[in-house]
Amino acid sequence: MPLTPARLVGSVALLLALAASPAAAQGDEKKADLKPSISISVEAEIPGAYRSRAITRVLDRDAEQGGEFFLAPEIAIRAVARLPKGVEVVTRIRNARLEADLHDSDTWGTDANRTVPGRSDAAASLDLAYLRINSLFWKELSLKAGLQDFSLSLRGPGDAFFAAPRRSEPALMSPVTESAAGGSLYGGAAPDGTTPATSGLFRDESAAAGLRVTWNAFSRSLLFVDAFWFTVLEGGVRHADERFYGVNADLLLPVVQDRPSLVNVLFAGIENDRTGSQIWTAGIGLDIVPAAPEGLDVWAEFYWQFGRYAEPSSHLVRQSAFAGRAGVKIPLDFLPGKPTVEPSFWIITGDDGNPARHLNRDFVSYENINEALIVEDALYGLDIDSNTISGRIRATARARILSNDDLRFDFLYAYFLLYREPDRAGGAKTDPGRRLGHEIDLRVTFDVTEQLSFSVFAGALLDSQWLAASGAYDTHSRNAFLGGLQVSVGF
Image (cartoon, rainbow, N blue to C red):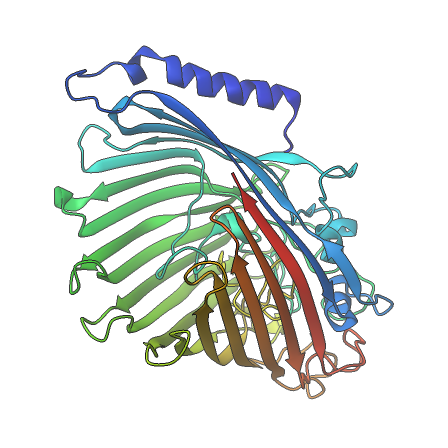
């Protein structure tokens, strides 16, 4: 959604009109403690990174592509108008770090990291534009309408295993390990998935434009029920929109008063009527925080999918997939730096790419998991979000330079396998094997102040049969490397 002058003027006019409307401003002055106000903040993340040719050749499907240094800054301006009666109007303007045109393969792959502010192809966009009413008719009911920051995160921000549309490509795109199934790209040209120098991997960020109604049952903050309906992708032609809708319930169990446990239940649909896609997802999640020892966290979530992946004119492609993960976070407060260790196991089903089977086993989601820099990260790495089995150990620790806990260390070891070996994604079926490899990542973050931080990160994917498969991406290597520096500023 490029920010034209007309759209900018319209957005500001809407913000001011809502702020000045009698309906928003009126109320019981005796009970109104909040005066109307507008706050503006600026946020910036400026990373510079290097990724080896084993990564770029997969992203671009190009045997001639070498390693590259690149910048992918994100600069955003956020305005929040707070009105009486718990009403807010929020807008956010930013450049897009990942931006590709569905119908223009020249913008796919590594070229999706192209929107550096100041370049001729950089475009500002309305990233958020929504109205929130915290007490809609009843104090237990709230409404959020517009382009919004929707995510379903069991364990906090940045951990959406199933849905965070604003930080994920549209759900019905083919993953990097898979050859495209018929109908997955809304009638556009699908990537071949096998031959170098074809169309590359589609990389973009979708949206969540629509309505979300939340019921805080009994006003006790123990049960929250969300009903939502979003248009995630405007397909560009009639009946080519992608929609995401459903019901989500979060039940808080106050085993520990300040650290409640959580039970999550979800039922959602993803559809596109141009291709006949209608995918249903049922899920459950548990995040258990025992009373002792402090910091112990046991969690698990599981999702099952069924329905139609696509319905081309020749045949129906059925959907049958599942995904799950489980782990435990163990505090080691008796050691220097008070580290935590978090072992976990993940499984996300995938397909072998055989079109004659008329069945898709790739798990379809708007995931926002970027834990592994090379295999999973959407900005830096391959963003493989289906067809994987992994065991991993994550460790964190803190130290002091200027103030308490201002230096943070994050370490990850993960071993990745393909859930199912694709027929075509790596050449001959027996050529690539199932081993994606061992990934080792390290990130060191220094929080200078609340407004400024620096982080250095590096990752290595080692002994990957899939990368080295002949006739696939011609990386000529079993190893891939990535590293960089990021500066984050907010004021």
